Amino acid sequence: MKHQDATPSGGTGQDRTGQDRDGRDRDGHERSGPPRPADEERTARELADALHALAGGVLPDPDAYRTARGEWLRRERRRRLVLTVLVAVVFTLATLIGLWVLNRTPAEPGVIYSGLGAAAPDGPSLPRPPG
Image (tube, rainbow, N blue to C red; front, side, top):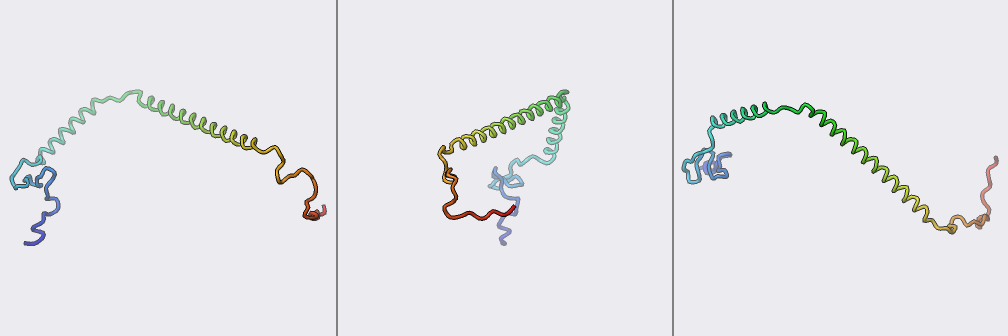
């Protein structure tokens, strides 16, 4: 006996119900298996006919395009309005924060400008170019 004789080939193992592909259960007894191909074809044909009849009875709304377009335009206007308000809020906040930071500068003169107007103590400045 070879290894391949002892192992089932691909696709012939048991399914979730415990049956083989040919309708036998674990004990080897015959059971009523899956529907035959003729039954499947008949079921598929009847289902297709029923869906075709159902689809034939559905009539489109005459104002469907106009309604959908109006809703789309309303959403587009609302999106643009929200974006405009958001940009205005961000710009206003940036301006207010900038003014608040500038207003917090100290009132006394800083280190760079002492207000004396005297020459630098390191010595004379560089000569100016003629002109």
